Length: 612
Image (cartoon, rainbow, N blue to C red; front, side):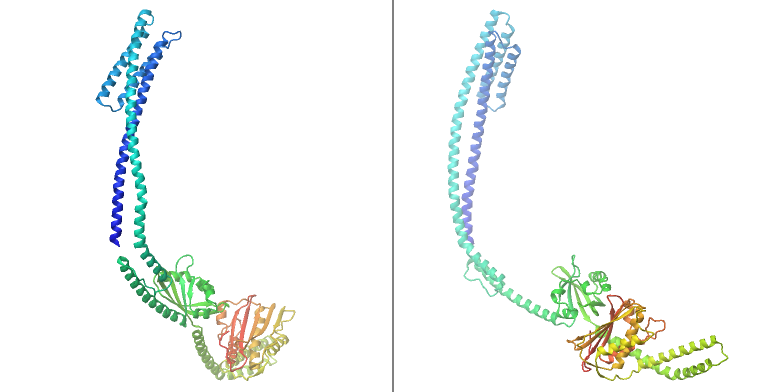
């Protein structure tokens, strides 16, 4: 096939080359001839101008015999123009014979000029004037005859050369028409050869390429010969290799996707370049379940959107550290879609793919680990509190009782002034406070086992609220400006719990809420049934002082208090009692100011609540 194409191309190229050479030569020849014709036309124009100048001078001479003769200056100017015209003829290239005639003609024109000047100079002498005028006319007539003869000869040569150029141009035109007529035939032959020998195999290969692109890796090219046959063999081998590579890639991708999707930890791939730095590019199922978003929702977020505000402010610095080559391992706080915050352990580093930088982040929810650490810490605290309570009970309680009795007896003595008795009464009050602290420690370290019974949570909350209202020292009456709002779910199921211990918890929470609002505000008690968790939710919120995050983190720790005379055991005991019921208690900021305590208790003690 290659030889056929080379032969056809060689023949066509040779014919085109010969035709081109002939055309170039013919065009050069015609151009030279037309240049000569143009030159002859210019010579003819010059000679006609010369003739006109001579006739003009002749007319000037004849005007000297009239009443209005031409002025001498004008005649002299015409003679000068005549001389310049003949001098122009020498600017062109001429043969020797033509140059001789031109020199003779210029000599005669010079004589003619002298004769005309003589006529003008002897104009006063009538006899001599006519003689000189006759002489000038004879010279002028001779010049006119010579110029006419030259014009006739030039015109004849011009006609001959023009006819010859026309014949040559006609021949060139015929050859060009023949070349134009045979050119398409040669192109058609070449096109037919190419179409027949090249286009068919190329079309077959193109069809095969399209099928491979569409995913049909089983297609093979058959029936081609010559070089295209070799190309078809290579194409088929490429298709087989491509099939094997695609199979390996698919298997590798399946393994990767299986590992990616089945990983227990959340995996994020983040954008590492451009204006969308930190945007979530993809995430696995664990990330979706951990954060409460759908995958489509996650893909519209930036990693900062699932960080807490404090952690989001640190993202830019962490990304710079990753770009410097550091692999980060750290603990941060994330937010779920519902707003709850939970701790995660993050391993993040740089990932480059197709000359593009990404960030891979693997997040592990460490809430249970943190809870275990907190439980262990609280266990240690309980152990210390138990040992301290036991020591206080044996070492302080009995001596303190003796001191209290002695002071009480002393305070009844009649001889003591009233001021001293007041001081003794204050001492007795402080001793009672120490006794209450010891009692609280004993209750926290060694609480009694709950006595479970079926109760109505709304009734328990209502009775505690009424008790608070009836206590003169804590009544949120009209004078104090505190209102209690009961937002109860009247379809709550009965739950299994110890009513006395729950009353102790709710009493503590309500009194703390009243104290936090400082004589004005709203206390809201809300109950709801969570059918999915089969648990009862209780919320007690107030509009008192705002609690910062540091206090919230420590508020359930034993001995932590913000009150001047608080023991720091009330909320710790409440948390202990709720956990003894298999429930959970937490605190969060109240959108209207203050705080909201959230409690979840299982309906049955056979069901334990592990998360909100």
